[in-house]
Image (cartoon, rainbow, N blue to C red; front, top):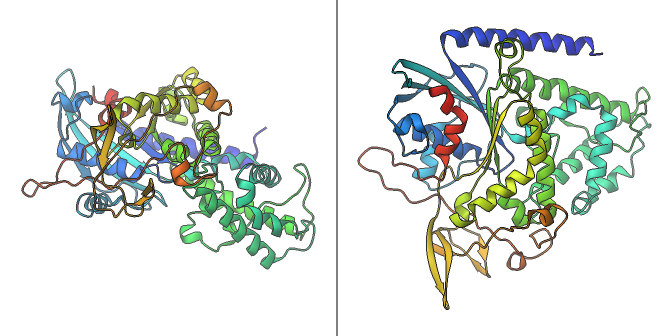
Length: 487
């Protein structure tokens, strides 16, 4: 039976959904969630999407724009006074003028885009698109709502003792061995445990390991909660069905874990996540290939956990009134421009295989789910490079300063041609435990896959107008996410 607090929370969610539904009757609105794990390209995706729509970019697959039915797309004032506005103009300048990738998403932000269009029947209409940008790590916190402190501790410690995580968590494990969970609460021991546990999570996110399953998400992006008790706890070796003695270290950790759920997780779910209509999940699968097979399997587990968080299914009037559902989810493998187009299908196949079990559940519930390989801003061009008698399908671009390949360190200014290699075709073997060498176990020049990071492209302004941003399949993503709402 649900608890009283759960019933109250459900009532609040239904009341908010009813209010949103009433607003939507007079002002049709789609709330599009944009998320992804660290370095997946959320900020770049939103910037390129807004720029392409407001500028009238070249989107041949986005039917309503390609056929001229979209008359205008314009930015409108931020709808929620309590949520930061997505810094679109700043990010655009960073991409075009500085040729730098914008900083990663560390907090939630929103942007409202109003689209004036003509329906296929000829009637003039307006669609409001509210874009909600939030870190994917926050999604991985949602399952905590249904887990006790003891369950979370057991899962976290078991995970920290597997594969390369064991080495990365060594300092935390050493400190953990000195703690007696039933001893009196101790602030200093708790602070040290929380710091070492956070250091372990941060080390997992390094590009050499590229681990994805790293809850609690706010430990790596604390914001204004840095140093607060709600972010000062760590797992303990305790029985999953045990009971914490009053005044003990165990009770202290458990109290702060529950505070984390109350202060961080529930407000995010109630005020933002539960209100989404459509969702795109951006995935940097190439970083997992760079790191090694452990990172790829960790990504698979993280994506399954992310999809399990969504209330999925076909939206009906009843569901919209009381609990809106996400009826379209797009998984997008980013950085497709780091591969030759001949390998894009393989990149999509890898991502599709990564989420296959979770996707099958979504489709049975009536949701539309798709997978696509994209580059919201294309940083490279393609070329054929002669090597002996062979012509290799290669890419041309400017590697970010400090990138290393074949013993050469790039300066961030020189354009180079590189053969990125081919992704595997034997997916059964790959996901059944197949091994390959990655940065987590070998030097960069010995890794089986090495995908360089490139600077944004050099673009020229035509008069005072902002240049178009080259892309790969951004229009296909738009068609899937909102094309049906512009018919």
